[in-house]
Structure formats: C-alpha cells, structure tokens
Image 1 (tube, rainbow, N blue to C red):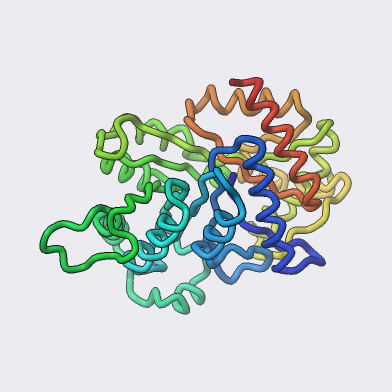
Image 2 (cartoon, helix red, strand yellow; image 1 turned 180 degrees about the horizontal axis):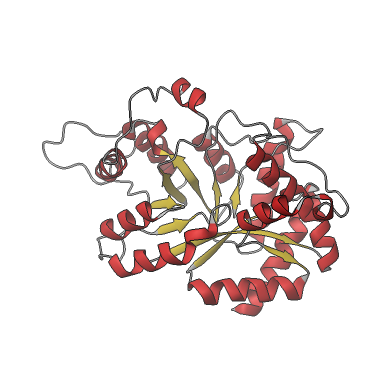
Length: 325
C-alpha cells in the first residue's frame, strides 16, 4: 500500500498520522507485503512531507510489514543525508526498510527553492545521485573517505520510481526493481514496463526484472457504494488538475454526473488504472491489471474519507487477491 497520509476535511494532521498507523497495522494483519509513504511538500491535505520520520513511526508501530518511501524525491536531498536517515531506520528495523527514489521535486517551484534546489538540474544528476546512494549503503571499502554512519553496510533495498520512460531505462541498466506510478500517470504503463524488461541487466541485487505498479482502489460491498466513496478521490484528482488542492473531501452523491464531459474525461485518464467496485468487480479489475502488465506486485492507493470504510476496502482487496492467488 502507498499512503500520502491524507488530511481529511474537518480533521487534523495528528488525526491523519494516527489513521496512517492504524491503516498500516490493518494492512499488516491482512498479509500486505509493504507500506510506503510518499514525499510531497506544501500541499494542502497531504501530511507525508517528512517521509523518513513517518517511515520510522509506521515501522515502530508494526511488526512484520516492510515500510519505505514511495518515494523520497532525491533531487530535494543530499544522498549522504538520505543514506544516514535510511541507514538509521535499517538499524532500528532490520530487514524491513525500503528506499524508493523519485526524480521529480514533488512540489511547486517556490517550494523547490525553499528546499534549496536553487541550481539547475541536469539529466545526469539523478543517475549520479542514485549511484552515490548505492555506494553509501554498501559496505565501506578500504580507503573510502566518505562513509554514511549509520548507513554503510545496511544495503537498504533501492527501488526506482517513475511515471515516464527515463527511470524505467535507468532501473533496467542498474538492475534495480522498478515501481511505475500508474496510480496517477498510467498512460505509459505498458510501454515503460516493456522497456524495463527488455533492457534489464542482472545485478548483484536483482537477477530478474521486478515490477510494482500503483493501483487506485476503492472497494465496497456494492459497485454503487464504491462509486459513491470514490467521489472523494474524484474531487481530489479534479483539484490536482485544476490547481485547487484541498483536504480530502467527504463523498458526494452522483458527483461524476455533476461534471462536464471534459472533466470526467480528465479524471478518467488520471485514474485509468483504478479499480472501483464491489468484490466481484475488484477481483476482475485486479486480475485484468495483473494479466495486462505481468506486475510482480500491485501497490494500492486507497483514499476513502471514512477511515473505517478505508479498512473495509483493504479487506475486500485482500479477499480478491487471495482468490487470484
């Protein structure tokens, strides 16, 4: 599962953080493999900006599930700082920490400058920073002068995240697992996965291509109720597309019917990989995605306004997954 730690309308950041922990604990009880948190800054309704801090919070409140970043936006950080933060987490929670890396800023130009990204970024920066992180998390070599402490020797698994072909190619060249952001940018999903698999080079960490894809999921006992609950996500997407970001809004009856056709089309394109419906619809939707992409893992993004109904969505998804297996 991927969590942006949504702050709900009428709620607080503290409540959002508590909901995230309860959701992670529930996902763990259902057998989910990992729980990732995404870095975003200066965005109303998203409380996951201090991603490494949240990773530690979630890992500390769970027992088995892997916890990580989906992802850390590497251009915002010095690789040494990332290595030390995630190296510390790996020492606290051995064998349970993932480090997903993205190359987008995850914010607006003003906030980019506030994050000290005042120098022009080149195409070579991200591959170079990824390589430096790999060196810092690997065992220190004789004569190595720059050592992440903690960090060196923890070998925290690195994933490359992306919504375009750039990271797919880099992940293939470096022999790293690849996560495609189809939960918000599904247009190049099949093309990116194909490129990654065709160009993949085995590495010390991975012998075969390994693909994870993001899936927006809203499940309920019936298709009609799921569509109603999904209106919170539709409102969020419309806000992203129109530049009017708000806190997560409560669901609205027949929300899609109130929109203009171009708005409905834009939301549909944004959520083309979404699975929304009752148990049978969810089962068929997840099966279709798995068959179309051959993905090794599906990472669910579940933004339901009512926290209890969000957990129920995960219950239905887990049952659908068990049926697929």
